[in-house]
Length: 135
Image (cartoon, rainbow, N blue to C red; front, side):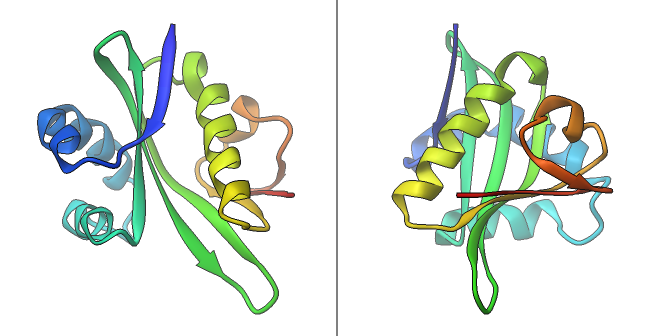
């Protein structure tokens, strides 16, 4: 059974730091716009959210989201996602992230990522590597 939740305690980050860094670096190395230092600082300041996927006590994935503001919209952006067996927990991840965004009164969720996302989440529309779901 998989569990996916937003990290709200710094102790959880420190306890799982090695695997979080491992999963995020694999993605960050393909994303020249950010560095691990910038991402972790944004999480610590509360500008971004860290989500972890667990199977039992083992962390299988890490996802980072952040709010993005447009003149007429405010959405939650999933901008980093890495880990193992993503196909197994991505539905739970998306469900939880969408629920969080709705509870915060956001207009939707968007994803910037590789083309492989379109296979994992067919309910989102795709224009190359940008996907959006409006609420």
